Length: 146
Image (cartoon, rainbow, N blue to C red; front, side, top):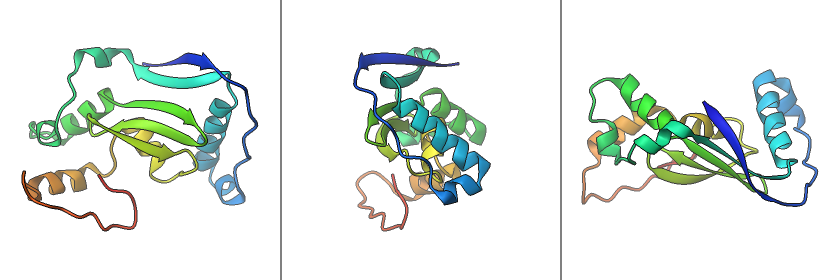
C-alpha cells in the first residue's frame, strides 16, 4: 500500500495546466492532473512502500537471479520509491536499486519509472545478459537509458 508523507512545509505555487495534447488522452490528462495537484500541496510529497524495509537493494544481475520474469518486475515494484522534489522533477528508484530524476511533464516513460521502477524489463534483461563486468557500454539511444 502506498502512503504519502509530508516532510516539510513550503510555499504553495500554481502549476501550469496540461497542454492540449495531454488533454487528448484521458490517462495522460489524469496523470498530469495528479502531478499538478501534488505540486500545489503544502510540502514535498514522498511515496514509500512500508514493506520495503525488509528488502535489500540489489544489483541488476541479482534482480534477474530468478528464472521467472514476474519475479523481476515484482522485486522492482516492491523497492519502488518516488519523491517529488519541486520544479516538475521527481526522484525515483529504478531496477530495485538506482535513483533517477524524472520529469513530471513526461507522460510516456516517466509514469512507468515512477510507479513500477522499470521500463521494458525484457530489454533490461538483454542488456544484463550481454554487458559483462569490466565491459564499456555506451547508451546512444534517443530516449533514456540505464
